[in-house]
Length: 339
Image (cartoon, rainbow, N blue to C red; front, side, top):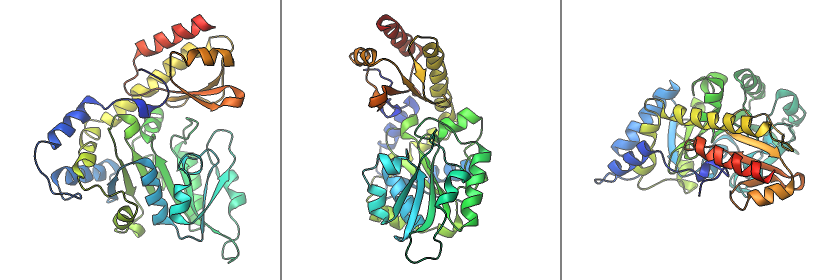
């Protein structure tokens, strides 16, 4: 069934599937001491143009838990937007894994700013208070919005002034790069990000993410946390081999550009229809909008998608690297019939 529920529902890019099949043709040493993993690590370092410390993991939640354990002690607090994945959608995993207090910050569009963060930067050195340790950012945000380079630098500068670190959850960072016409390096290393959760599952990979440590103060430690967090794959080649076609010839960018373009097309078709109101800017591959509840209920009989705020009749639609114009045309035609 075709849907606009999530880019997690999309398939695997043919070039990635082809590489998985090739990696399956022979034996390989486990736990990452194989050709595929060495090649992937080399490509990742070349992509970010820095001597970073990348490790492959199973999924995004595991990636976030590893990063936050790496950057914190249990007496720290982690600052994030109130819509942040680590606060809303990971069942308390990051809080349990780190022992840290997670401090959600209200935002109108899912984006933090120095002005929003500043009131939470207090109690430093006071043994009675959790010590602000990490600022967690999602790029793109959970509301589909995108941080600019200037916005990111302002936040990382503020964090580093207070000896804090910045963790970027890049589950959809490819869509942000496509939206801003910037490289992965320009949107991470050059902005002062300390550690990145580099996602690919939402953009054409079958499974797997990569923790990329940019801050050399933490080099060498992350592999031990990966093992303790049950994210070390014995047959590592099936995770790592996917990043080879993904990072070759800008496949990651092409996939994201297509997903974003399909979101623009869907937005253009939707915005002219009656009784439809967008609640967030469409800056990536996610659309947030409201429409009459009886229309939503009828539409759900033919298409699967999620409510974002059911009380307000707000839904989320997501396009993917494999969304087609036909998918959009058929969806719009069905909606027009209902309206």
